[in-house]
Length: 147
Image (cartoon, rainbow, N blue to C red; front, side, top):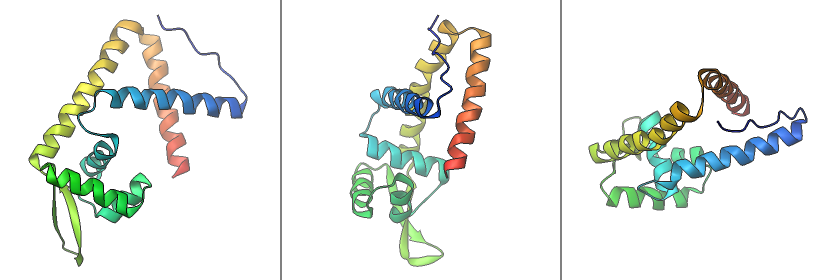
């Protein structure tokens, strides 16, 4: 069994602990990634939200538009995304997943989630999994209050 973290009612300590553990979890998910993190992040946004302009992706990732333009160019060069004219604004181009990009992100997600599923199955009992599910609900609420 995994050891339980002590509950700390101090808000500042709780926030710091949350930042650390979420950072470790994100790094673990990215460990086996087939692409550099900026490229995976852009593909993930497009996969979740649909075609976006480079500027919209930059806002979502909180990076400079020039940085996102470079990332999109790399993805396009690899055949993972394609640009099409924006039907609502002909001056803009939308970046969408190609079939290869869609397959890559789906495969990556399945692979990334498989280690979590295995750990949940072998290291956590039903009550702990229920606690974790409630924690996910709370984290979702936390994220939504910050948007």
